[in-house]
Structures are given as structure tokens and as C-alpha cells.
Length: 340
Image 1 (cartoon, rainbow, N blue to C red):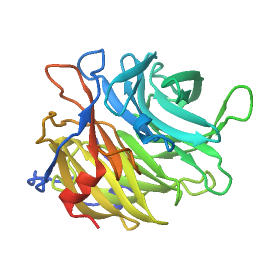
Image 2 (cartoon, rainbow, N blue to C red):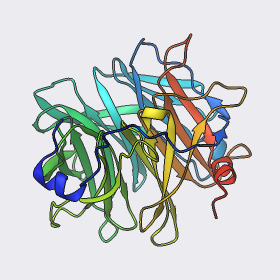
Image 3 (cartoon, rainbow, N blue to C red):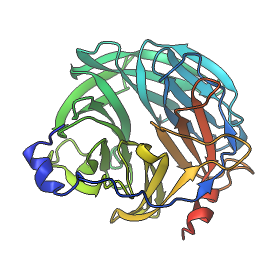
């Protein structure tokens, strides 16, 4: 698909006329995997992680089945609960006071994008629906949340399939949530993966065939996108899909992207978003991943298997079973790539 003029200016030379060989990537073994989703073909899509600070062994992973609903899994990968929903795609979590809120892009109505909200009952390991809320015209695709540091206001970003990004304010102060669209941004072609750095207020979005972009997440900011990494067929191979963050200090750490076209994951060093390496998941007792859509990453102690953090990646080919999600130690990724 042809990029809009502003995209062509920002990412001149992004589209390659040849297909260079992708950069080699070490294998990192998965430590665990979830029970497969119930529906076949392209079904599992995007995970999100909740870390239990009191007992890391009781942390939870949620994952969407975009044909049936949303699952809650244990750190062992066992499915603990399932909440039916017609077509949820991407999902994200934030803690707001005593509650854990999950938000998912809702594609049940392809003419009008919706966001579905849930409370994660961490004791029961179950998602409790709070409602579906219209956002704007178009098909909802990507979804990520942001908690603004200065006032703890909660915002969501819904990435429409045509590249539009609608920002919503989520007000949880009343008896029922209030979701209000506060601004829109636009990328030229199909986009999905997104993540927001709560420390810096930077929104990162993956335009699948073009590359990665950055926006200021504040609703009062300009809607101009900044190009930060291109699909070059070498370090990042189309489709550019899920995004996740490994923050360090005030502005440092890593941005991780699913390089779906060659079954790899690409790291960029923050804050400058410079290429820092890539890896694949495989080579262990559990099968590896391929065609990964969504990913999530959370640092911290998750117990002996994940002392430095947990990465969860959707597996697009879990044959002979249906799709599922693989768990990887962030410490193992760091060792494989010799990260500081």
C-alpha cells in the first residue's frame, strides 16, 4: 500500500526493492507455554502481564483469542479462567489504585471501533467485564494504555486497521466507566502494535510494512509522528507487529518489536531508539515461536524461572495444537544478546 506524503518524507527509503538477508539472531529457549486457545487457525493474538508483588509465583498472564474471548493463565501456563467476547484483538493492563484494569480493542463491529474494559480480579484470576465503549468509525485493531505521571490520568490508544490512532480518556471515578475520544493521529497504512512508556509519555506504534513511529502521548501535544526505525528486511522484517518495553532508569532500557516476517524479535536501545540486537525463541524442550503477533514484557522478580523479568510472545504455529503463548526469561534474552 502506498504511504501518504508525510510518511514518504519521514521514512524515505523504507521500502526496499530487494530482500536482503535478515540479520542472524541467537535462539532463546521458552521456559513455559500456555494451554492452547480453543479456536483454530489465526486465533490467539496478544498477551498482557500482571505481576503479583506480594507473591510473584501467583502472577498472571492474560491473552486474547480474537475469535472467542480472553483467557487468564498462571505462570505455569495453565488456563485459570476464560471470559467470552466476540472479537477482542489487542489487550493491555494498568493498575489504578486498588484495581487492575484491562482494556482490549473490540472488533465485533467493523464499522465502529470499540474498547472493552475489564477489572482483573487477581485473587480469583478472572476478568470481570465493565462494558464496551464506542471510539469512532473504523475497525479496532491495536490497543495500549498510558498512565500520565503528573495526575495518574488513564488514557487508551486504539489503533484502527487503516492506520488511524484514536486516543481516549478513561474515567473510572463513577459507577460506570466513561470513555471519551480526545484526539486522533494517522499513519499511512495498516498498523497495529503499540506501547506507551509511562516514564516519558512516549507512544510507540508499528506500521506493519513501513516501520516504527513515535508520538507524544499527551492529548494536548501535536499529532505529528517521528520515524524511529524502518522495515529494512534485515533488522526488522515485515510485518512489524507487537511492541513491548524493558524500562531502565528515567529514560533508558529497550523497545522490543516482533519482526514477524522472519520469526524474530528486534531490540532498540532507549532513549535514542538505536538498534541493539535481535533473537528468536526456540531451541529448548518447548517448541519455538513463529509468525508472532502480540508480545508483552515486564521486568522484576517473577520467581526462579524469571528472576529479571518475563517476556510473553504469541505463537502463530503451535501445531499440532492450536495457537498459544510462550514464556521466556528476560534474563536469558539479556545473556544471549550480551546486554548491559
